[in-house]
Amino acid sequence: MRVAVCIKQVPNTTEVKIDPKTKTLVREGVESIINPYDMYAIEEAIRLKEKYGCQTYVITMGPSQAESALREAISMGIDSAVLVSDRAFAGSDTWATSLILAKTLEYLGGFDLVICGKQASDGDTAQVGPGIAAHLKLPSATYVSHLKEVELSENKKIIVNRLLEDGVETLEVKLPAIITVVKEINEPRTPSLKGKMRAKSAEIQVVTNKQLQLPDTDVGLSGSPTSVVEIFTPPHKVGGKIFHGEPEIVVDQLLNEIKDLL
Image 1 (tube, rainbow, N blue to C red):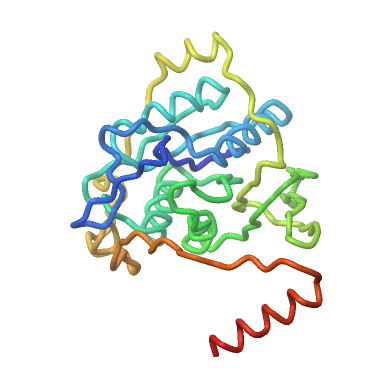
Image 2 (cartoon, rainbow, N blue to C red):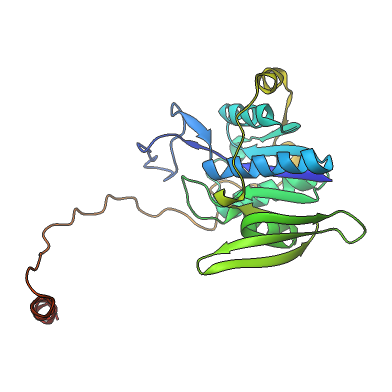
């Protein structure tokens, strides 16, 4: 069984800067970390490796500095790492990013299971995982809180719990498939000293558009159907009223205020 984890390196700061021309995040010179939700995806892949002997890969798209995120995943127990990096990919939105990652997964020979974090902390769209599934035409399950069963016989499948707002949904998903996970699924481990030493010398495979051969019109800013039109700071809210007294009196005062606004 081959398992891939798609991760993202995100800014480890609330002082995020935006390029006024491209409307994209400025990542150079900013301390970065593995997207928090992706840590749970990494841990789940390692647990599958330990239980079923899976071959595990971690994949990220980004500049050369994203290599540090890959090495951290290796230090936790992932077998192999792939950096998808090409200047042509800069500025890709979630649709173009998911296309690039989907083509990378195909280029690497395909996988039985692809695991992503629920969403990235710098975008919060939760679109890349499902987008990969759409490009590869594979079944998917989002917001997975528990991987209940893995069947690797002739009828390959997984049974998962999905965390919903009003409860839990259990799904049977045929493999190959893609899932996105939430933090309730596990507790990420701390890398061991042995793992850190292995990560330092691990070879990182680099994939560029020379291998993927995607048209320029499908990647980067030109291949992104969505774009940031304007960036602004919301106006500071001023005022507000606090009503005092018995509930009946307060309700009457509030209703009068509302009527005055209409």
